[in-house]
Structure formats: structure tokens, C-alpha cells
Length: 327
Image (cartoon, rainbow, N blue to C red; front, side, top):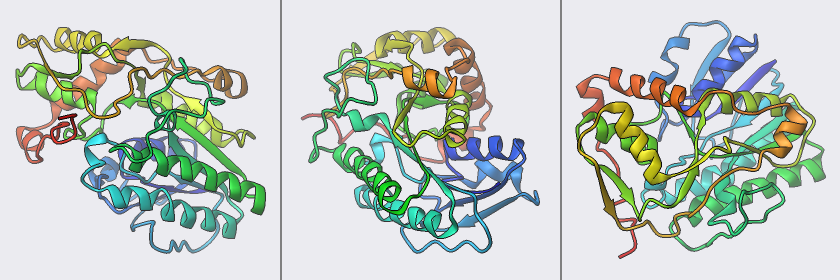
């Protein structure tokens, strides 16, 4: 297959490119590099079966020749980005999704969109099945991402119903691994960055909020299985092993030998209190479930960040939730 991956220089997108190439497909990665990084795909440079195009998918997308699949992963996804670039986030998940769907329609290609567990908002149902419609604040600071992804899902289903495009929708839960941005602002790189610098780990709120973390290779395996399936409805992909943020911070301090402990700061606005996927559907339809243990995945991720040079660790401002907490 010849496959386009938008957001292909991003954290998940670059790992997806690796997996598709390993399966023997030809891959075009497209990214405007607003949060992606060509370092993530530098090892693919020069391969005859790989091409990188720097392009903003909110502009018209032109690809010469046949395409068999379009995988739309382009979108900033970190809460620290929401107040900084809200309009680009909304555009890439609306206009960008529209352009990607139009390309899939024109090429007769299968279309997969990366949606998110954020469509469930601060859930009132636990764990979250695909049938749950969510509890989202449309005008809160997270609304620019949450509602944009909900719109993208609706748009995708409209193209499926009205135009007959073969579509797939994956709802991605918390994912971690090598190639995450050190200044991403999410809990895994935040904690590891602080631990590497001997700083206390910052917990927002009391740490009782829960998350479940899926290692990136497991997530990518789920994406590929969904792409090759016949399931048009949304499918959760994530690790249902739930833990509190406080427990996670303690695990990071133990892994890294960080003696500086933990500090607590105010909870960000609309921060979900619980997040755990119900993966019954993925188990049944895709024969998928996560395989990489938390200990194994965190060790690989920590070793990756530890291998970065001091310049790579410090060249970017390290983002936090400052300016995004409830006053």
C-alpha cells in the first residue's frame, strides 16, 4: 500500500511510519512541524519507500499518484498547547480533517482519523466505553481540542455515510514512549524531565486523579489493526491498567533514584478526574490488547530521555500548566 500519514514527524506519527514501513508499505509523512520534529524521522531519510513533505494540512493537500490509505494524525495534543495555539488546533481537526477526507475520497483511499479519549471530557462513566457520549465543557480551556476532535469524528462519519469513504476512528488514550517532546507538558515527560534535573515532581491537585498509560508500540499496533479491519465506528485503544498520578510520581522517583520528592500545585481547569479505557471492543474485533508492562515501557522511555544531550534537554523552554490552573 501507499499510505499518507499526516503528523508523520510527531511522536505517534513517526512510530506509525516505522511500523508501516516495516510491513512493506510505501509511506509519505506530512507535517508542518508546529509540534513535530524531523529528528523523529531522520533515520528514514534516503529510503526509497519513504517521503517527507512539509505542509500544513489546513491548506489544500496535493499528492501525485495513487494512495491506498490516509491516516490523519496531525494535531497538537498537549494541554500546554491549548492556550497557546487554540486556532491551529481547531483548524487542523476541522479544515485539516476535511482536506484529508477529501483526498481520501478523491483517491478512493481508506481513511483513519486519530481521535482521543478527550472526547469523553471529565467522564461520569468509568471506565469509558465507546458508547459513552462524554462530559465536555465546550467553552473551557480544553474545549478547543475536545470539541475539535468530536467535530472531526462527526465529519468522518458524514464522509462514510454520504460519500461511502471507508473510515476508521481510533480514540487514543494516554500514550508514552521515546520521541515525546521534553517540553510536552504531559505527565510522563514532565516527571522524567524533573527527575533528570533532581527536581521535585510537580503534581497538579492532590494526585488522586487517575490515568492509564499505554506504551507507544502497543498503541501503534492497535492503530494498524484497526486500519486493516472493517470497523467504521470509534474504537478505544489504550491500556486499562489504571493508577493515580501520585502513584505514578512515586514510581518515577523510584525508577530514577530522584531524592527530591513531590510538590503539589493547583489543579488545571477541567482536568479529568478519571481516565481509563474500556477496550472490550478492541479485544473482540481486533484481537488487540497491550503487551508492554509499565515497568518495561517506563525504563525504555527514561533511557531515551536520559540519552539526550544537555543542549537537547535545555534548548526548549520546559512547559508546565502555569497560566492554565484555576486561580
